[in-house]
Length: 119
Image (cartoon, rainbow, N blue to C red; front, side, top):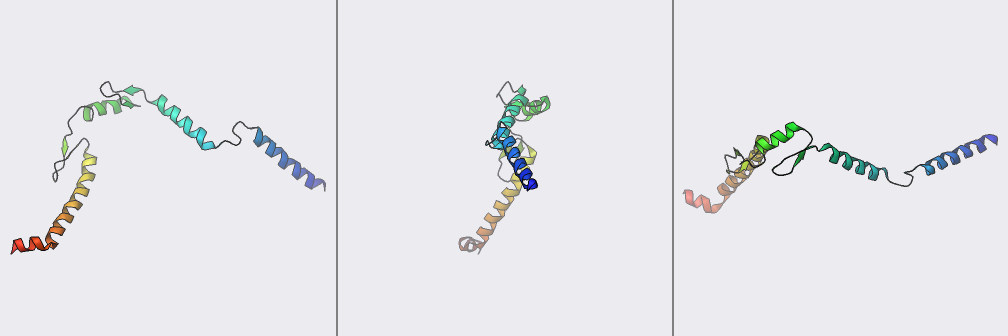
């Protein structure tokens, strides 16, 4: 009997401890998101004097000024002549552009209107 009372008392004590904490009843995620926003604002130190975009490192800012800000995109799609600032964006665009081109060619070859023109 003594043992059951001890267990019951420790459960009540642990509940009392949780209820005294400052974040009891408050979702943890809300505090965490607020903290991340504050650190994000503090980490952006370097701002572009042309457009106002901010970066954490000077190297990122210099890359932005050299390749992005006020510069005509130099990477050109050979299929549709669309321009891009970065080569990796162009490469992913070309994959999609080639798929669309193949679909157009396939539809034209299956279309009866185009088969009459060939004959």
